[in-house]
Length: 91
Image (cartoon, rainbow, N blue to C red; front, side, top):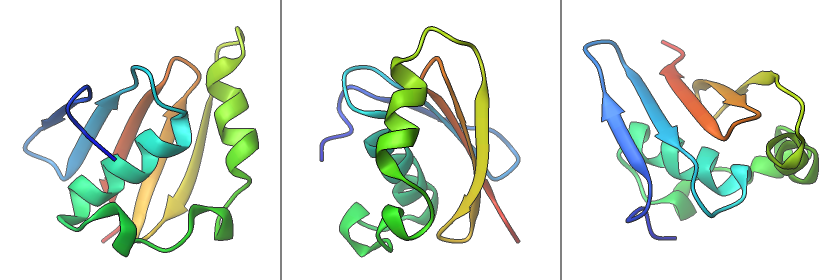
């Protein structure tokens, strides 16, 4: 998984924002959490243990505005329908 076409920015708080481009929203979440954790994405637990990946991906593909917030790998993740993902350390 390449992060070359994602934009990550870190503010003073432990928050990472990933702007989705051409990957499914699930992949953006995994890459954003991996970046926040400073680990390889393959080291994270399977995302399907936390939620239905197809449902998350369909959130991005819908024309409806909205967001979903959940906990994954020790981070509070907010995924928005526009593909933006906010990751905040749960601690």
